Length: 163
Ligand SMILES: [Zn+2]
Image (cartoon, rainbow, N blue to C red; front, top):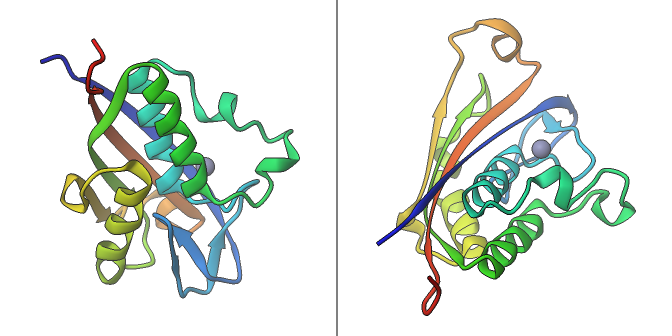
């Protein structure tokens, strides 16, 4: 059976004052992620991976900064819209794997909640969503704690009756 794989990357700068919205979860923190929406770089990277695998454009095209509807928008809602768009192209998510690169916060205490929130938005089981955390070993802008980067891959399979 044919499957598709897509990749997504996103980065956001830290801003003063929490909480930190990441992977659909509000994490108590001294910083948040700045951005036009809620800055959820995990959700954004997955959204681009899903759109990429479906050959359905990218997040900037689907949710332009110039649209007031996207201001402070819940990024899980953006992910749900991307999944719907992939469906119109005949695809549905089967599995997602994410690596978050940041010096802080520690993800381990929040991983289960993030997997559950992302899985619900993707319409798949939580065990088909992987979220992994890495530091950048103190190097560069990530090492200086200026922001966060995320890389995601999404595997899509044909919808029932499609293809
Ligand atoms: Zn983003």
